[in-house]
Amino acid sequence: MRYRKLSPTGDYTFGNGQADFYKDQVEAVIQSVKTRLLLWLGEFFLDVEEGTPYLQGVIGKHDLLTRENVIRKRILDTEDVTGITNFTSIIDPDSRKLSISVSVSTIYGNTDLFEVTT
Image (cartoon, rainbow, N blue to C red; front, side, top):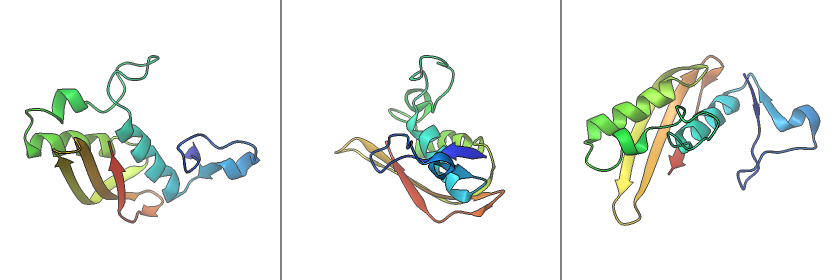
C-alpha cells in the first residue's frame, strides 16, 4: 500500500518526493482507516456510494451494537487490515462528537491504539 502523508493540519504533503508517502507500512493503514472513518457516506461528489454511513447506521436512534458493527465493518473493509485487536466508541451527547479508539492488525504488523473523532 502506498499512501500520501498528511500534514498536522490534515492537508496532503508535497515537495519531498517519495518522503511524502507511506509505502508498505503500518502508518499507511492507520491513515487509511482514519480517512475512511472521517468520510461520511455521500460526501465525496465523485462517488456518493463511498463513505461511513453515520446517518444511516451510527448516530441518532441506533443502539450501541448497531453503531459499533457499522464502524467495525468500515475498518475491516480497509485495504490491508486483517483484524481489530482493540475497539471502543463513545458518543459525547454534549459535544455531539463520536470518538473511536482502535488498534488493528495489518499485513505489515499491529498498530498501537489510535483515535478518530468525528
